[in-house]
Image (cartoon, rainbow, N blue to C red):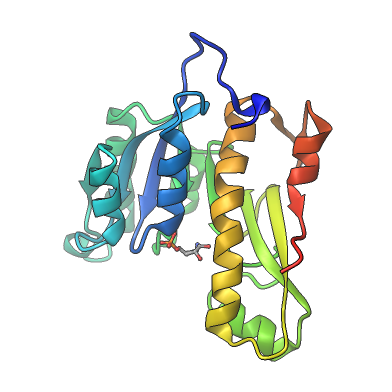
Length: 228
Ligand code: GRF
């Protein structure tokens, strides 16, 4: 880990709650980063709305606390579901929420509870291609560049101040799977980077833009365009 990634001795690590619904490969990237004692954040809780989410196994393997709050018994009562999720996060002392493939839309009430303390990773270069099926939609549109974004969450879906983005090329012969694979490798790189910048107090929200304070190399690393 670089010097910039060191947590000063004695400084408490930022407590994260990671919300998932499935595979959890981005969760794994955060677990791997947090496994370094010098990483300035730790995962206090992994919460899934599905009991069969593979990410729960990843968390358990890493010795991280898990919780399942299934949305189905709430029978469409979203406020009650979200109040239960909110309460569980607070019980665990969570200071910042990371959405990592959490497949429930969150109400303005929930977003407001975690204003500027909740981030998401989205598989496109926002503000382009909000929503689902981003890889196929980029291919259909004939895009030459694609990528991923870590951003603060606002009530509007896939909107909010952008913290880190990475771009990848769209190659001739790509299909949605090959493109998703190339983007996912970058997701796993930029999610821990965004968490680190926030935990170090260096991702400053200025209006609805994020400024990266400190080492300019980190700000540079926040806009990545790998060759392949
Ligand atoms: C990722 O593509 C992420 O960008 C999107 O949902 C997917 C989650 O994948 N929000 P995983 O569960 O982290 O593997």
